[in-house]
Length: 98
Image 1 (cartoon, rainbow, N blue to C red):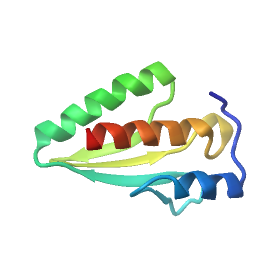
Image 2 (cartoon, one colour):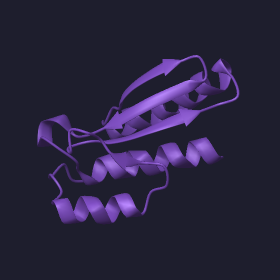
Image 3 (cartoon, rainbow, N blue to C red):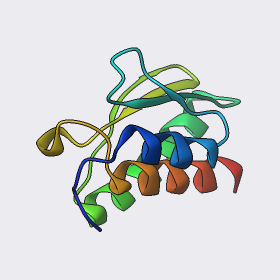
Image 4 (cartoon, rainbow, N blue to C red):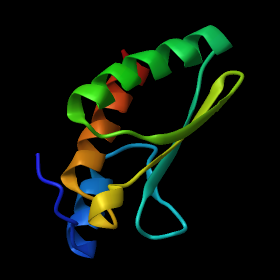
């Protein structure tokens, strides 16, 4: 998957295909908050995502407080959003829903 920075139009199109994600205040990241029933569920989600992210060699900026996981995605070396960010967001959505 490419690490080329997406145009504003491509970002808007990709973002329209995701539920719950929004363009972050910086304009160069996407963000979402995931809320679980317990800390254990939140931690299990983070573990699954961490393994997928490692395989992709693409890592999220995230934080966890009790049952909430806040995520921000961008591709640091591209200076903005790439296809990798949207692929990881889709993976997170699958793990959250499944």
